[in-house]
Image 1: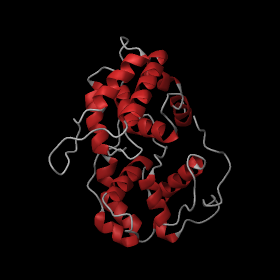
Image 2: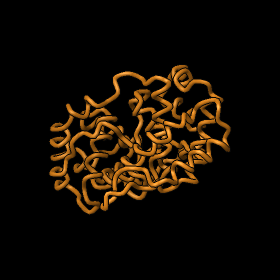
Image 3: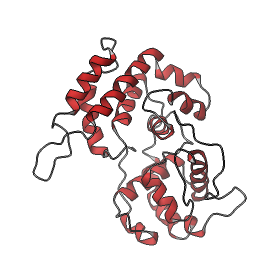
Image 4: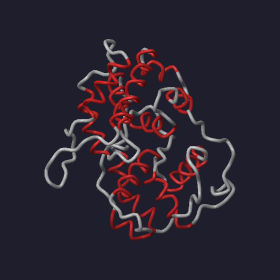
Length: 262
């Protein structure tokens, strides 16, 4: 696991510094308030059960790294049918079975010609899923382990022991499953939004993860937003905008709530 550095980056505002005006006024607060109720309602109200946690872990492992939300969802449904966390699998047999399924042209979203897609990284993701499944079986119960840890940071550190899981994936899993409220899922969408309003500059992840996260949490506080709801809103907003769009023009592209963050 790559642990984010504890050395502050000069690109991030210190607690004693004021936030850039673009980050808190005038239009960010207006746009956020317009969508706040919808996004607050999407936040998990209870911690997920063991079965839900395992399914979400599988989804997270199959997502990211250029894999779209829709493709990851489709692949997750197919691989879940294998029962990858069951005791009957060895690492080699599960790896082979997952790779075989991921190599088939059977996934959505459909291509322009109406055909189903292949998954992008069948070999690599088969290795990750099979190693993670072994780790889960060795732990016994993700739910019980998370419940035994009092702090969100401790839960994230523990999850990072799972193959294929770093700070972003662990935060993603914990937030989606209601086991964390004050963690950020730092990806290209969130970083783009933070750069546009001047909150971060030339940062590097995972080195600067903790400090970018702290800056995002301060931004949420300034806007009167819960971190999870603001994060999901920004993810939706950025996904539906061309990368060059910035500033007040983004308000016109405010997205309908998707309900699921990846």
